[in-house]
Length: 330
Image (tube, rainbow, N blue to C red):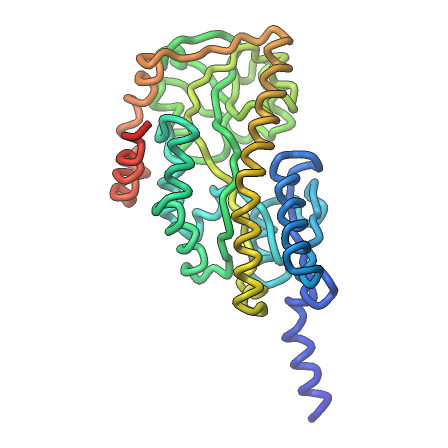
């Protein structure tokens, strides 16, 4: 009987052991490479937690997809307690909290300041709380920056009409493909990040879309020499924690971890700004044409999104109205 009890207890402890709770350190998974803004923030988070807990709580950061090659796999590991922390895009978290889709709608924000006013205000705080309340086994700690995504093309355009007839590589996301359709283009999926360069080079597509760092790091600026600052989406990152691990902590220790996470946000935003600047400098020096839209040019993109908001935003009209109200200050 004692052996049976011991076995049951051992099995119950497996998630905590896997997460690192009883092995001396908790594990944090990051798919981005060492030195990337979010990776730097992960390490700053780990440093603050260890420092403020006086060494009682240690977090080991694994960058470059060392533990999990996909963010969705890391999320699943959090849910069962095989992992303590991970940094992911907000997009996959929307599977558990559909309202998060509201903060990803195209041409929603006037600027980065507008987005941060939303995320650090009542709307963003409630969405973080909703992650744990969803029963998904996830706990939202804080948001990180991932900049804005823009089109980059083999030819220059000045407004939305320039997209007509173009084939543009998009993420495998129905809303984003629909966005391109409404602009008069064709969204092409099934092309991996490492295949974008050759797809543009061979004429399979006329361009793609992403943020400054990816545009530069992947070398896509060499074959698509026009970067259009339409800033169609701003999808933040989220630092997540396992509910299994949270429940194993005292309230004081969780509050310490939560505060450390919040205190790394400004750090990550700064690192992101530095990376964006350096990437932009590299591609500008290479002769890339950066197209800055006029207010009328931006409005031409935004005005075509009404059907998309009806199709994908109808369940979040209240949140979208609140976001627009916040935007009145900018």
